[in-house]
Length: 132
Length: 232
Image (cartoon, chains in turn yellow, orange):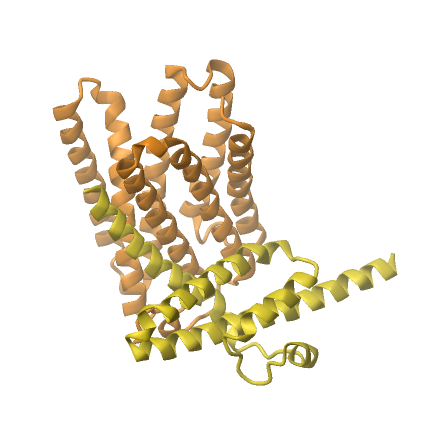
């Protein structure tokens, strides 16, 4: 019985976690990137999954915004989940491969938008310090 | 006494619960999600109360055990009611409020009766075990109801981003709790791990609700087709 409960709750958890991550990503999809973020990340139009790690590395170079920390971690976990699906199940189901590619690209775009926000945040902090 | 990490997680959880209420008031959504906020406020007060009882009587005392399990049952009922108000939000345009309320009361009464039946057959300490059993069963009912609500959100093409995130956070919380419960039964010898996971999970719900209140305006919309795992 415990195994059945475990499997059912894990299936529910996975389904809701994916939807939750997609609800976090959704608002950033239509947000345009600033020219400097486009330059520094090399993302011109749409991002690809390969950009994610590089953008996250850049993100770690900027001062952290506390309210975003948990969500960047959640999207990082989602990205790892997508990588796992891509290297296992998606090899058998080609439609899943296209879906994981699209999702990985959107994770990278989410990270780029977060980078944009962090740069703006750092700039505001610097301006405030200069004013003081 | 719980270890220092246990205390940190406990205080963090209580602070986050208070933060949800503060964020909701600050963003002007306290009344809109009244039951959710009252649940968080009550959780915060329960945390403070439990800490007082722990200080007075100690972790191993029957007083603390009673306080813990009774307050847990009350909190679960509160959370159940909070979930029902999310149903009312999702179905508000269909004018089915009274049916939702009636179904909720019947389901709660049914769960209570079922719990009583289970306890009566297996225990002589009916009163204390009843609250424990009720709390546990309501968690599973909550998980199923949240999942059904998520299905309704997708079906009805609900677009309110804040409401969607509140429901999804609750679903993740319930399913993670159910998974931990199942693992605890499968591997009872790893009790120290399961005992520390529950309070961490308890922090995630207020954290994500606070985020939903702070970051998303009540008018923010999201296309529901973007959220479905299987494209619709």
